[in-house]
Image (cartoon, rainbow, N blue to C red; front, side):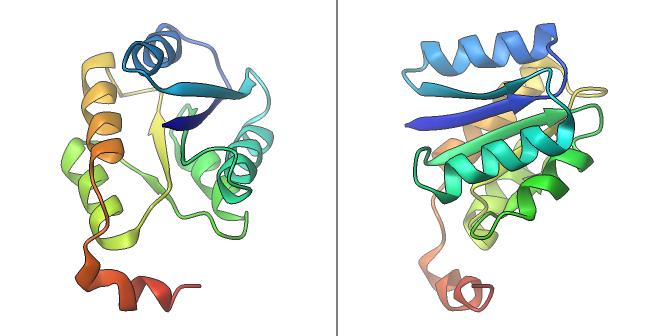
Length: 135
C-alpha cells in the first residue's frame, strides 16, 4: 500500500514508524519531515486526495494541528487516534483515510498498534450510506 507520511518534527518515533511501514512492505511517500505542521497536514492530505497514496499518516506534538490541516483538503477524513480501537473505528465507521498521531504521548509500540489497525481495517458496508452523506 502507498502511505503518505509527514511529521513536523523528526523523532525516534517517526523514524521507527517509517522504517516499520517500509519493512511491512508499504511504499512510504515522504510528505514532510520537519516542515511546519500546516504544510505537513496539507501535503499528506493532498497525496491521499489526489490518489498518490491510499492512506496517510501525520504526526505533530499533539496530533491535533496536522489532523485539522489534513481535514481542510477536500476528500480527506483525518482522525486523531490514541489507540488501536479508535483507529479501527475511524476506518470502519468513518472511512478515515488519514490517521494523526501525537508525538508527545505515543510510544512506538502504541504507534505500531494504531497504524496497523488503521491499515488493516476496511469500511463497514452498512455504514456506506452514512459516510456518503459527508461527501
